[in-house]
Image 1 (cartoon, rainbow, N blue to C red):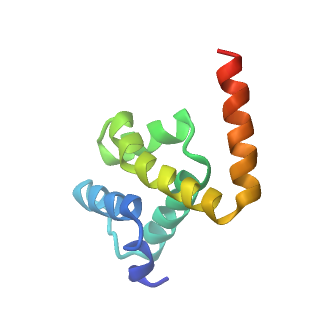
Image 2 (image 1 turned 60 degrees about the horizontal axis):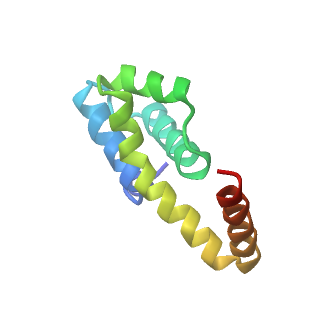
Length: 103
């Protein structure tokens, strides 16, 4: 897998940096595959608490640092997806309206 693919994402770059600091071989295919998969999961659906905690433990960072590293990029990704699909934008607006009414 090309190393450049991993550099296209802020979260992937953060994972590479933290993995390197934690002593992992960031050029190893297994490490790169793990980073690519974690990046895809984080940016599409977010990470659940258990996964966030495992990543934090493996990298010797806090769960809050892991979350802070991917949330802004995930939000931009979701917004871009909504803007490219007007039908999703309409559904999102409808769901926002429902959420406001049920607060």
